[in-house]
Image (cartoon, rainbow, N blue to C red; front, side, top):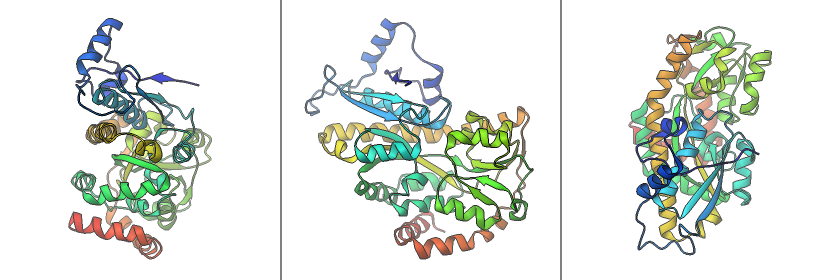
Length: 358
C-alpha cells in the first residue's frame, strides 16, 4: 500500500507547486511548517492539539499525481494542517489503494474511512438530486460555475447530502467535458452513431450519450486507458486534465471540444466523525476545504486550456467546430426525462436556472 504523509508546505505553493515539490532540507521544512501554521490559541479543539493531533485518512483513486483528484487531496491536506496549527494531520492514500470512486465513498459513509475525493456523478447514486449537475449545457461558462459554487443553492445541496452518512465539505469544478475518440471528430450527434463511448456512471450521462446516438459504456476510471488501447471502446469523455494525466490522447487522438457538461467533484467526510468535532475544529476543516476547492478550480480554469494545446502539440488533433446547438436540441428528451423522474433534481434545476438568469 502506497502511503504518503502530506506535510505543510510554504504558503506560496499552489496546487501545481505541491506536485513539483516546495521543500528543501528537513530543518528548513520544519521551520517553514512552524512559520505557516496559524496561531490557534483560544480555539477549542477538544482533545486535539499539535502534540496530539486528529489524524484523518483521505483516499483518492487517481493513478497520477498530476490528476486533479490528487491535487485537490494534497492541497486540502496542506491547508488543514496549516489552518489547524498542526492540530489536524491528513494522510493521503492515492492510486485507489483504499478503493475506487464508488468503494471509497461507501467506506466514508460506513465510517471505515474518514475522507475521500469523489465525483458528483458517483455521489448522486446516494442523493439523486445531485445528478442535476450532469445535465448537458446547464452551465455554459465559468461565470455560471462561480455563481453556482458561491450560492445558497450549492450550500443547500451539500447540506442535503449529509443524510447519506457522508458530508460534502465542498465542491470544485474540474472543467468542461470533451470527447476523445479514436474514430474521428464528433461535430454533430450524427457523428456518434454506433460509437462505444465510455462515460462516468451517471444515469444522466448514460441517457445523454445514448440519446445522441452513441452506445454509452461504464467502467472504472483506471480501466479506460487499457480499453482505448485494446479497442474495447471507441472513445471517452472527460476534462482535459484527466485525459492528459492518464494518457487517453495516445489512443483517442481526436478531441472534439464539446464542453457539454461542467464536471464537479469534492471532498467527502464521514458525517458522524465531523459531527463529533468541536465547532472550532469543524470550521477549520470546512475553511480548508473551501480554500482548496476554490484554488484548484481557478487553477484548472486555465490549466485545462493549456493541457488541450499540450495534447495537440504532442500529436493529438482537436476540433472546435462542434455544433453545440445541435447537441443542445438533441438533449431535449434528456431534460424531459430528468424533470419528470427526479423530483429533488427538478427543484435544484429550477433554482439554478433562476440563479443564472436563463
